[in-house]
Image (cartoon, rainbow, N blue to C red):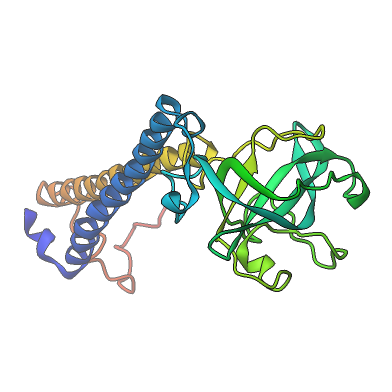
Length: 269
């Protein structure tokens, strides 16, 4: 009765099931692993907040990764060029960052966001940086890129303004080397509001994390659906063969010739 499983049609069905189910299980497990990684990073962030671990020298925290992003970094140098970063929102309000390049003893400069001010970017409202040698402590951030969510990157900005904070956008503006990172001062002066450090990309229990969990369920449902459809086709085939053997059917639907005329009297009223 089960010889039909060896027919070419069923060989194709069986191969599809044999490949489809493991693939769905693999993808579901992979999505579940991504969700668990986000849970682990969220636990690490809440159990030991980076900003509470004490300041460390800037060079010891580079390059910026999930472990060092948000850590307090300290660096010495002298403030140089100052730029404004427009269209940055804080607490639901639009404003701009006051960014000043700090030239360090290494000869390279690190962008330092000294604070946030509400309203349109205006160089006349931005406090001048301290003169002379200073010691700066701020939360470490990775360089932005133009595709980062919430980053303003419109072209045609006026002179003295910057759309994206990063070495790639500053290299054509300043004549010295740059760190591929930036700092945000947590205790700004001159009435500016501190800019909180952002969580590194792909961490935390955000919407994307729960999307991974949803995709996990979808892939496992796909695997179950493939098995269900195989069993349904199998059961229908077996029932058809049993009916044929019992004399209820003279031929299986697959064997009947569509050109064969219907038996006499089949169409009579």
